[in-house]
Image 1 (cartoon, rainbow, N blue to C red):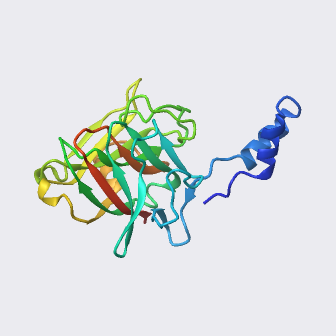
Image 2: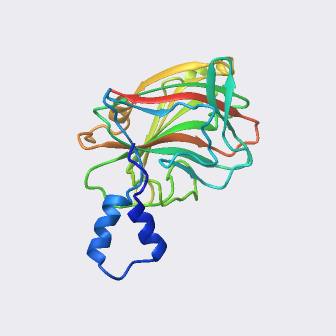
Image 3: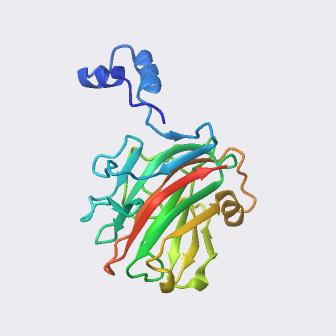
Length: 255
């Protein structure tokens, strides 16, 4: 992980230096004020999420971002036997809890995690996993998590050109289904993939493993991935009145 912003960054912000030495200030901004992000380790993997009793979503690490209105029920760390996990309760708000990532898609295409769903499903469970992808040379397009939720913004969210949403479906027959939309002038390209489903599979822990590059290939055939990077991974929770919840014990990106 990149270290916290340097003392120089904090100092310049505090004293309000802006007009003198613009070139120097710009250089310091690049070197010392870069947003923290998780990077690939020596083992070729990123442990995106591994909750422990000290992990707080109220004061998360610097490379985590909470987007949207503060939920009535904040995600919370829980322990059950040998498992420590984050508990997400879907209520009246739509929000996202994501971590900034910097990894080449083709170098680390495999996403694995452990989760358990509870409560109502609707067509899809409201608690989902989201992956943001960016390409070299893309235009800066700050803004909302387009295609995921409407109206959620955040300047700390990395620029991204495409996203993959992984969900739990209402029926076991939905497993493996993929819906993809192309990029338009107003929206980024979005691929929605159902990895599992069915009420009979609610309330059980599941180990999941998926090749993101393969989903990308199926969703957007002909779109190259040689410069595609994973820029965020996290959990999105849609507003729901069905009392749905989900527990996530681990998220890992690897080669």
